[in-house]
Image (cartoon, rainbow, N blue to C red):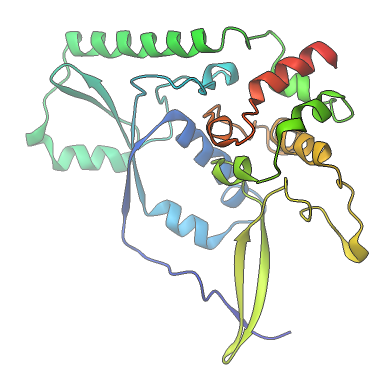
Length: 273
């Protein structure tokens, strides 16, 4: 069997600050927590590094054409999951405390702050509503009473998947830029002192992802792999963990070489499923 050590992992007890995280980023961490920290299996490496992070989030000040958080009942400003949150207002920021860790930071630096007034809080709410309205306007053609989860759940055999992948080049960019895609494989390598085991990010869009012994592959077609990716996010994941594994960040749309828009695929599914 051999003895294994994590040669590619360096643990550190030093705290790290993530500054400027958005709602979609915080939501992705909640999704990853459900896999690596709060489930039956707990990853000690993930838990240690996660505990050493100070999360300072911020409101979105504008929306990209690819943003669709509102379609998933999220907002372009954080409501939870942060230690501190920054909201831009005239002359500075409204700082909101979201955890004991954040409260401690504020208490240690009170001389740099003052109580937020009604005018500043009013500005914050207006700016938040303006950006939310902007996101909703961008996505008005994709909005529906039927959720992504409901539409995609029973859609595996829909002809829409074949149409959707006509422009797909199978690059896996949508997998690797996604903040919630978490699939990996383990690679063992023999060295002078034993074996090292390395986690390598994998992508369900790759041909070999589902391949098993003797080369059999239940998802040999690109359309099947494309469908599986969204079924994982809006079918398998919520069935097992109660969460959609998507945050509406739109990064998969931005990175796609073939200009495939997930919102358009779901819209077509609503019509043809």
